Length: 592
Image 1 (cartoon, one colour):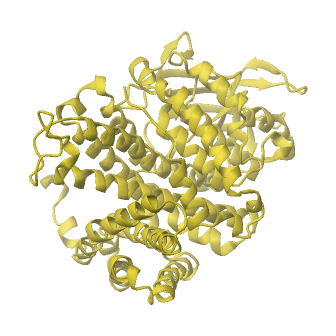
Image 2 (spheres, helix red, strand yellow):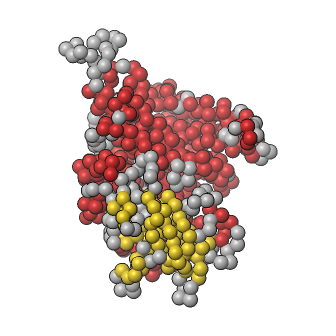
Image 3 (cartoon, rainbow, N blue to C red):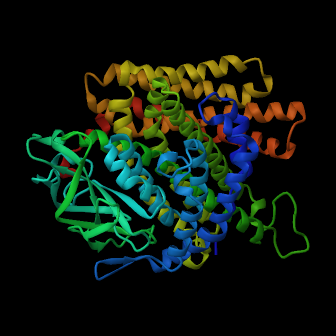
């Protein structure tokens, strides 16, 4: 059975040595000293390793069962959910007035990684709740906040997002779910939603659904969409639970992965709903949920890769097969462990360099969110908005690739269910699809985010890279291995942006045909920047004789691998982008 250990040391390195969180000046970050964050992450890691990880294969094998309208979760999930509740983990970064601890989002991100790596399907129950809480915090009335948030923060009640319908996913403007106004100010919600994660289950007293629907008078398209709170059980004035609402689970989807999470078809039959935010402004409220969810899904991509990588390393050190071409490393045994072979090393280095770079990138994104919210920094908000489709799209694409590569280390055993490696690949696969499929993320990046605020934020990113290179150009230890590759990759990114400006206005297909490559090009540059920053810190620690020298040498070697073996992919992506849209659009639909 696969195992998991929280990479606390690596997380601490990113938080304190690279991001220097306690010195950043962001309100609340002064509490994030090294001892405090270490204690929190270690405790989360213990829960993840000892409670959640052993349930991961259980959830995969048993799945969820729909019985008489009630979804039964896998054996052990309920007890584990109680332990998460008791620890107050869901409220770590939520307001104290509703029972949270008001810690920074960056710390919650580190904690979240441990739980996702240990058991992604289980973590989704509280993860969706957190997104719903954020939407109510941002757009709900004071009465709605007081009614729902304390119970949701404590996980006595959970939450969901209800967007997709059988005939529409991305194109929400054609949704059919209706909201009819009632005399008491509520709405009657009627329609069907699909792919609703944690839509029904047996671990909470109530489930608070946030549902997009069309109310009269809004007009066609997305302008007519509003957002509604539709609880499974209506809530009485004293806060107690009342009658069952007109919402039910009609089916659980049979899925490729995340079997431990109930993916439901939800039927709304005149269910009582309450408008959240402004009428016909539901898309704005929905994006509060979606943006947080997309960062969380990007984390899922690399967190699954982290868990798969840990087990692949253990297997590679244990499995005996063949001899090292330079001489036997295990002369007393029948063969050497497969980790001696260069191609296995390549495979593992791909995984290690991606996961550690992705962690730094995601933690930096979380720090930008804290900076935006806690310091009311519009520039930080604009920069993380630009980065969101890159974090979601690039990290989930590559995270899935790395989970497959970890499976490959096992050879035939990786394809056999009892070894557990296929679950990481199957679970990671969904992250490329939900919360906006990755092709949509690429279109959002190129079609909306690049030009936002006159291109201010992408120019700020270029300046960030240029400034880092300029500030460190005198560091000879960094130049060839980190700075020069980063400079070349950044030039590729700028050239791609210029191509879109020159060609995209005349023929939008030239830009949109290259959007997916641009998202990956951007992702590589972001990880290149993260590795350059980590390389600089690790080298400085070595030069000063501080800390764990072996850890820092390993960090430099891993970063060097990424810069030399992965970052040059930017040139390939640029060439594809500059080939334009003609080759992509050449065939008539009938000729496919």
